[in-house]
Image: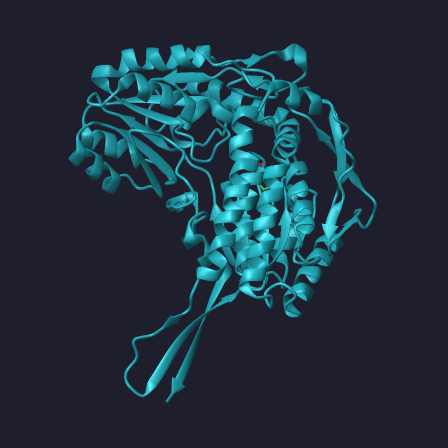
Length: 494
Ligand code: ADP
């Protein structure tokens, strides 16, 4: 991808975005719109429909009608597969347009956005398309004279609430397996990153997805998201976002129809570096990239660096050297390593975390400030705080910004104790050349994903999900299909 093609799109006019309900673009029922500010310069990018409860109810009704008449679930598996494969092809064909639009909306550096957004979305859609005609029911090993069949059925209407950090990637992680199983879906993009996801929904229709099967309503979480979560007609709710919203969704499910709720929440993932790591220079580079890319707005970011005391000073100095060389700035420049923070409020919150960390006894080893204020955009220097006490705010709370908390440890048992001193359990990393230690750490650290001598990048073939307050359920891999599936037993006397 060359810079000239990106630049050709950087100021393209972005039309006002409406909801997509029953295959049609429709405005909010009361005509209201909301402003979309670009994190690149703080300027208005476009307007989107500001959805109402009535809009969400209409989208859910459209999804229900599409499910009941089996216009999608009733198609032969090979036909559904063809539609999803066409969709993946269209995403690939529009990759640059989708990536640039998404970056102007959410601030991710374009190099990463191209891979992680349209690139990943196309791969995800293709993966689940291919699974459609390979997903069998089961015959139970029953006693003679009986036949036990286990059918896999779609759940009905799936509600999906998507965050702003990787809208296409995370959106596709939910949409593709839900649609592959034959469900209908209602989507609620995040307020500050809806544009590329809405374009993804348009492309699904271009690929031949029947109207009503995939609907999308833009607007505020506490209005349209809440209406979705409180609906009596949504069967499964899938969510990626903050713990606070996740808690609300569970309450809404309890207050309504007991819909199944799957939550992918935050993390405070420990990246644990032993002195016997095979390549400390590589470990330092991956450590920096593992927390600072996308301005730290990555749910699995290695935001806690636990480093063996004997190498602490040299290792931190190397991570700081790499961080300071990472170019922060225009996310549409291919040479940028760290783009914009998504919103002004997120940037203020990041800076507040840094101040609190220093107040609580941490030492600012690098960064700590806002950058490029003259641009009007939301930029922050990659930040490293050392000497973070295990119970300090920065060790315990998720920042969701480019802030690395460093704590040193004495031995393996100490590392495990520190790693597990968290309400979260999403991801972790361990750097060692001792094979036995690597396996011991995989077993001992309570997370859904452990990396060994690398950090980040597992592909579609493995599940992603957390334990503890990082959530429940899994995206990616064939296991993700379970969320969108009801098992039905047929018990037959022969
Ligand atoms: P963040 O604080 O990082 O923006 P949120 O959890 O608030 O994370 O946002 C993730 C998604 O949840 C967004 O799409 C947002 O609109 C939605 N959301 C926020 N509040 C609610 C709510 N009360 N009910 C349903 N969805 C919500």
